[in-house]
Length: 555
Image 1 (cartoon, rainbow, N blue to C red):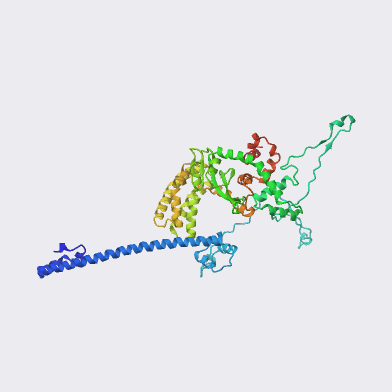
Image 2: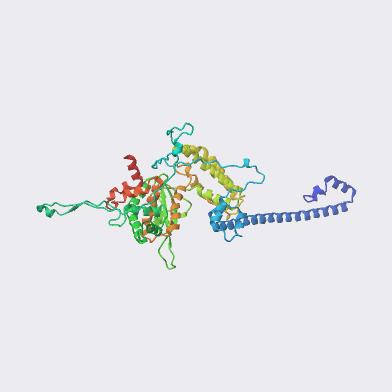
């Protein structure tokens, strides 16, 4: 009879008890009792199954609600960071909430609060606090000229306080300070000799004058140095022309309009365009290019009265020059035209314009590790308790530590490649497994979810550095070249016209290349610009920054 009981009846009614009841009770009564027990157990099991399903559903809904709240909190934190500026990303969520109650707070105050060290915990001994090591006294560059100034002792110090005899100089206490001479404006008067023969029979020979030195702009009211200073001030120091015009009027009493200065800039850009064309050929002749792009406004005044958003595309190689290419759009035709049939390695972010129809058929496309790392860092900024994202950042930092070790040991590409092949593969396996596991526990639309999907989608391009020794882990050099543009456009606002775009790009190419190659942009421009308009096109490749620095090291 016990065999008729459903599963679960056994524990409620042990077999021994059932046998005893069967012996003691009439068969009809025992059959009725066992049927009731079976029905009750089945009812309880059905109710238990329903409750279990409801519990599972409630758990799923609760998990989804938690993840949804996390996404909404991330969005709210991002809006607050955008509202209060970059410094606010270091503040906790509670600090950002408190800022909402201070409507008059400024971005400077937020930045100051983010830089302030946290207060020590109560009861900590002063001696146990961690102190930052003092960096030591800073030294001034040895190549700067030195001007000695000797300070003599006072008459009282020149006499011995014991015997009264004259003391002698036994040495000097030396200290160094950085000084500067204020810019001095003056008018240079150039007198060219005029010669003629006074013999009567030679009157037809006429008068000869000493030749004029070549200049950047003939018959200009200002010298080449003023023009070069204007270029450097605008595109290296980010000082707009209207401000430079005001400085000239204030310091020299000379009123030069912004329009005139703009003419100087456009002329220099026009002269530099062939040089930058030669720089592009140098770049494409290599085997490795890093690329990036940034928006810049162009003053076109469309039907809505707004500027047009154009783009500066930047192409460069680590340790070499960089070239800016101006385009009115962010479309694929920009990099397609610039790269032509380039068949080396191109390293970029994940922008889709670099994907198809770019370069030659053998070109290899590599990705940048800094971008996925930055996405996980952003996830941590939004949620300081996001252990999975923190772990991902730490693992990627270990990957960058391999290259840092190679750099500190001054390894060449071959030695660094051997180090990478030894240490990177097991670390890459950890990173991928961790991200795959994390992607299954977070919402796809959360910051961590997007970071996971972004990294996994780029994975084949991210590990290309295992095949190509010269490939850097990140595209940070290209992004660093964009920072002067980002800073500059906040000051000079926009490019004056579509026609001015390529000339501005040429100037930026030269200024940034000189910075990368660690050569003086003033010296370089002062050497190549005078007479550049009359230079044969065949000699232009000799005037690129890389060729110029090579010729100076050879001489």
